Image (tube, rainbow, N blue to C red; front, side, top):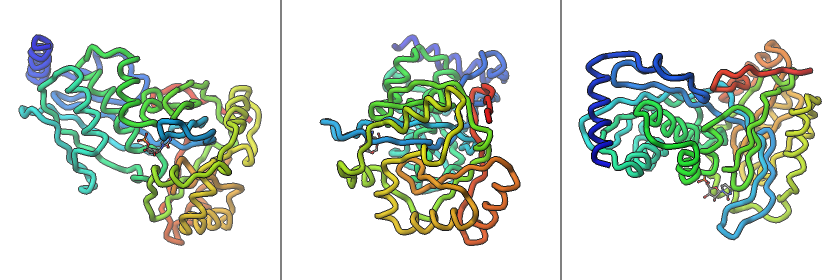
Length: 333
Ligand code: C5P
């Protein structure tokens, strides 16, 4: 691997010296926007919601078998990669409590360096906007963005299968973010079936409501009982409805984790009631929460509910479905 390291070091130096805009010489990224200036590389990593999340049962490895339909939304974090002379990965973040080696961003970069025996140092500047420990996949999306960014920036000899397996090792949701968009995710979440991005016109505006607590995914799963398990029917039905462009009813959107989270966290139950009282037709939990989502057919209706919740002190994000690679969303009514 020594020759590759030498090549990588020379590559970084020559790019730096040439000061060229590398992004313009690469094919269009299917999963995120990126710009490279000199020896820095910038990408965005998006949040997701779980339209449905069925927990089918507990596996012998301690994880739970899932069927979940996920969609990326246009709430994003920004990651800026800067080549350094030190043989290490460091992080700087607008949320100082996230500046540590346990951050998935650092672990993803370390995994790549270790896999390929790289000595090239790296500073990752992470600008967080996606709420942390919120059920929106922020950390998982960041990890996938690191894998893809380094792969492209450094032109690494990693194929899609290797990236997927590194992603799955970093976390159950990470492989989804390698492609993003709309997908059915099975297994512990790592088996991805990308879906055509057909989206109901009536759900084109999404509100994300984040109660002021953090929720531990591990704890939510630990507290599940067989009564919370489902057959996966809801996720399969939602997948079929979206693909055949049939309307979705709020009752089609199921999350097996929601009942337990509402029982354990009164703040989530309270927020749920506030969203309905503010005029939303329905409200669902995203992932293991505590973020809730609802949707609207018009911007006016979404903004009205957003303002009503914000005056009560809720953190609310107005967003929309997005395919990070720029694929068109086909809205249907
Ligand atoms: O895979 P990840 O590290 O994101 O998962 C966090 C925790 O959530 C796991 O340690 C596990 O307790 C729980 N989990 C689960 N079944 C899944 C995914 C996550 O039990 N399919």
